[in-house]
Image (cartoon, rainbow, N blue to C red; front, side, top):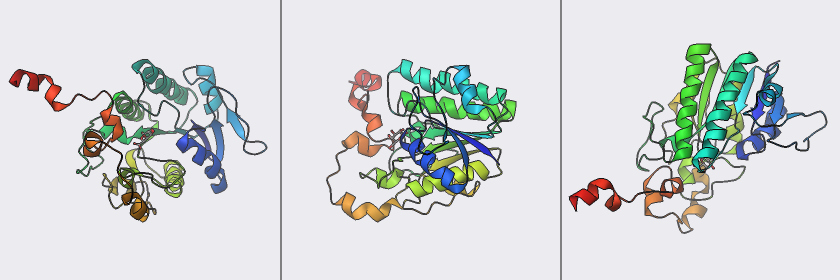
Length: 273
Ligand code: 15L
């Protein structure tokens, strides 16, 4: 039987996968963060620790075939924190995958690696990166790392460009485009474990009518999302849209507004004035 490791098992995405994957017969080991956490059931295979530390990585990856790597900083944060958690820890995890003979790493990438695209654009999976901040930039590093470890070391890689995934319905206008429901998330994770593929990048969203992404690449791994954020559109559209004009204009939404330089304050505009 395939042994699967899950890092970040107490995060938004990890919480759903930790609970649901064993129901689908997956033999799962979960890393719950820096400190121990209570088991969900007797005999649950759990680890904890700092993933920059090789011993913590080995405790997670020994005897593992597939790692679903969801750990890391998941929002915009100061550079040092992003470097520690999303660059250095990711590198430590990939080196651990080499040491432990892990066959595949599923990497939690993000829509924020593309957040500076306009909200009126539909992206194919081969679109050029346009990160909307340090967090999105760290996902560019992560996707390139996944590619390198396949090309250079033969570790299969799937980069999941996750939209908005919490265990709840979409909550605002933007999420009508970016939402991925929990059922689709679990179906996607199962395809990531089982699909015969060497390297792929897949948009991690539901079959949303207003999707920012062309979902055909997901077909390569047999992912056919069944949920659609549009089912929740009537109630969301009845509420005011809280996002400002900048957040509404770009796919990355409110992430774009953090440390954003308005066009009138950019160097070119000042020279023209
Ligand atoms: C992400 O990548 C983040 O991890 C999450 O916190 C959400 O902000 C999500 O994207 C989103 O764009 O909604």
